[in-house]
Length: 472
Image 1 (cartoon, rainbow, N blue to C red):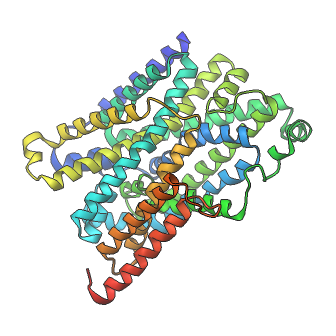
Image 2: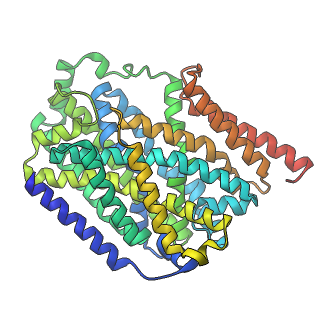
C-alpha cells in the first residue's frame, strides 16, 4: 500500500507539472479557444485517442466485465455492440459538425445549436438538460475511480472520493483541453497495457483459451454460457443497438470531440485508430470478466470483481501498472466531460450577461465554475450503487433522447425549426423519465427506444408543418 500510494502521488505530481507546463496566459476568446479546444491544432493520433478514451469509461473497464461475471457470456454479445459506435459517429456526425463549427468558431455543441436554430432559449434549455444529466454521467465515473482507490489503498470510500476529485480538478484546471488530450494519449496506452497484462495472466492460469472454455462447460451453469440468462429477445438487442450504437450520435460528450479536430482530413485519418482502440479494449475487458468467472467463481458479483481478480493473480508491482490503466480509463472520461460542462456554463453566462467578462475575466469565471461543478459531483457521488453501469446508462439515455434529433437533423436538413427542436427535446425527455419513474410497460424495450421514437417523430412532424406554413 505504501509503495502504491507513493507511486500514485508521483503520478499526481507529474500530471500537475505537465499542466503548468502547457498552461499559457491568455484572455477572452483566445483563452476560450486555447483552454477548451487547444486551438484545434492537435495531431490526428492524439485526437483519435481523445475520441476513443472518452468512450472507454468506468463502465467498460469495471462495470461491464463485472456484469459479465454476474450474467455470463450473454452480456459480451450485448457489449460488443459498442464497437461500431465510433464508425457511425465519425461518418454521420464528425465531418459535418467539424465543418459547421469552424465556420462559426464554436467552442462546444451548444454554440452550434444556438447558431443552427437561431434560438438563445433553445440553447439555454439544452445547456440546463446537458449539465444536469452530465453531472450524473461524470459522477458514475468518479464513483468508479473512488472505488478503485478504496480497494487499492484500503481506505474509506469517501476519503478516496475526495482525493480523486481533487486530483481531477487540479490537472483539468491547470492544463485545459491540451493537457487532457495528451493525457488521454498516455492513458490510452496504459489502458491497452493493463488489459493485456490481466488477459494474458488469466489465460496462463486457465491453461489456454480452449481449456478455459472446457472448464466453463464443465463447471458453470448452462444459463451462464448460453444467451438466455438476460432474456435476449429481439427487443432487448435492439435496445442496446440504439442505446450504445446509433443513439450515441445524441451524446454531446462524445460528438463534441469532433469540434476540436483540425479539419475533415484529420477526422478521416483518426477513424481507424479510434475504432481499433475501442474494439480491442471492449472485447478484451469483457472476456476478462468471463475468464474470471470460470477461474474464480466465488467472488461477490459487484463492481469490485475485476479489482479483486487482479489482486489475486498479479504481483504487487504489476498490479500497480494495471491499477494505473484502470484509473486512466476513468480519468479520460471524467476530464473531457468535466471540461465540456465548464465550457457550456461559461459560454451560457457570457450569453446571458455580456458585462460579466469585463467585471471578472473569463479565467476566473472558468475556475469558479470548475470548483462549483466538482463540489456538486462529489456530493452526488457520496452513496454509490452496486453497479455503476446502470447509472451510466440512465444518464446516457436521457442525453440521447434530448439531443439526437437536434444534432443529427440539424446537420442534414436544409430547414430546421426551433419549435420542432423544443418539442422534440421536451417530449423525448418527458417520455423517457415517465417510463422509468412510473414503470410504464415498454414491451421489453429499454425506455430509450420508445422515447427516442417519440423525439424523432415529433421533430419530423413539427418541422414539416413549420417548413410548410410558418418557416419558424
